[in-house]
Structure formats: structure tokens, C-alpha cells
Amino acid sequence: MSQYNRSRRSKRRNLIRARAAVMRDTMSPAESAFWRAVRGQFRRQYVIGDFITDFCAPSARLVVEIDGSWHHGRAAADRRRDRVLARAGFRVLRFSNRSVETALPAVLAAVRAALDTP
Image (cartoon, rainbow, N blue to C red; front, side, top):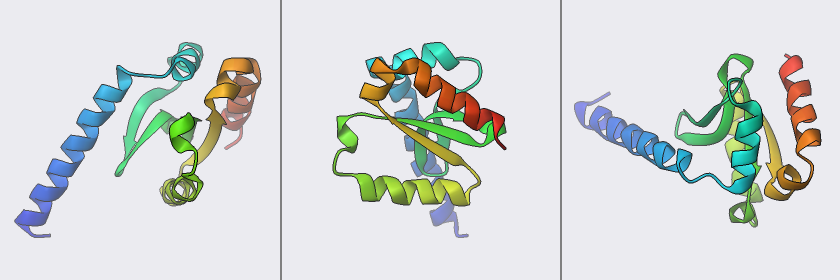
């Protein structure tokens, strides 16, 4: 890899990490509720490659995405992203903001089941 490409890659990685730090301070109410319930088991706004995941349990190779209105109309992009994460060895669970806000115990049960399943 050339010095130019290494430099570009390093800059991109730094930008992604900076964006993740900002996102940690601006979580949605659904993300905040989920975080309060799983803190200690997951990391939030965890960077994997070029992606910032909402929540990740690295040792379990599990990613949890809490999808708000921004994801409407992005199903194809989300599927591509999920495939890339799967190729990296991660399982991805997706929940809507509404599901987290109205049925948090059920969401947590699904997450616990995924954590218990290798």
C-alpha cells in the first residue's frame, strides 16, 4: 500500500472515530433506553471497518441496531451493510425505535437469546 493510500485510510478512520464520539453524545431516546439496559455488556457507537454500529458486544460478535426514521427507504443499504458485517463475523439484530420504546422487555429478551446463541 502506498504512503498516499495509508494516509487517506488513516484520515478516513479518524473521521469515522470522531463521528462515533459525536453520536455517543446525541443518542435518540430509544437508544438511551436500550443503553441503560445493556450497559456493561455492549459498547455503543462501536466502529467496525467503515461502519459505526449502534451497539456491539464484540466478544459475542453481536451488533444491535436501533433504527429510527432515518432508515426508512434505506432497507437495501442496510442489507448491504449487514452483509459486510456478517462477512466480518458479526450477527446483526435490528429493532425500530418504536419497538424499543414500547416493548423494551421483548427487545431485551431477543438480545439475550442472541447472546446465548453462538
